[in-house]
Structure formats: C-alpha cells, structure tokens
Amino acid sequence: MGVLKVFVVGHDWGEIIAWNLCAFRPEKVKALVNLSVAFFPRKRALWRIDTLRALYGDDFYICRFQVISLSL
Image 1 (spheres, rainbow, N blue to C red):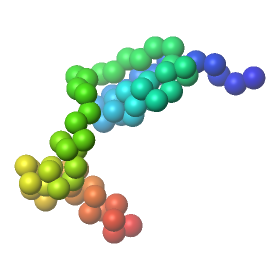
Image 2 (image 1 turned 90 degrees about the vertical axis):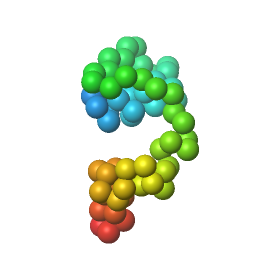
Image 3 (image 1 turned 180 degrees about the vertical axis):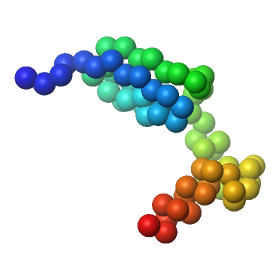
C-alpha cells in the first residue's frame, strides 16, 4: 500500500519542480503550497541557456551552474 496523494511544498527554484509535478502527475497531488516566487507559465525561449546568457552574461548563476554541471 503506497501513498495515494501527497501535499507538496515548494520554495524558490523548488517551486518549478512542484508545479511540474502538479502538471504532469495531478492524480498524485492533493494540495500544493509554493513560497517566495509567483507562478508564471513556462515560455520555452525564455529559459534557454543561450537566452539567459545573452540577457545576464556568463556570470549569471544559472549559466554558471551549466558550466559546473558540464565539467563534472
């Protein structure tokens, strides 16, 4: 006997994961609480690394994470 539905709490970047869980597996979620960041619909072009790099530069933390991740 597993868990039928869960309460999900997301904070900061964890909210994106929580929203995606609700979007892709709504039958598993009883309730969602997100803190600190307002919901905005996903716009694929906005989240591309090259777009973020052009807007904010190589030192923007998301761009820097990509460099770290690729070097591991």
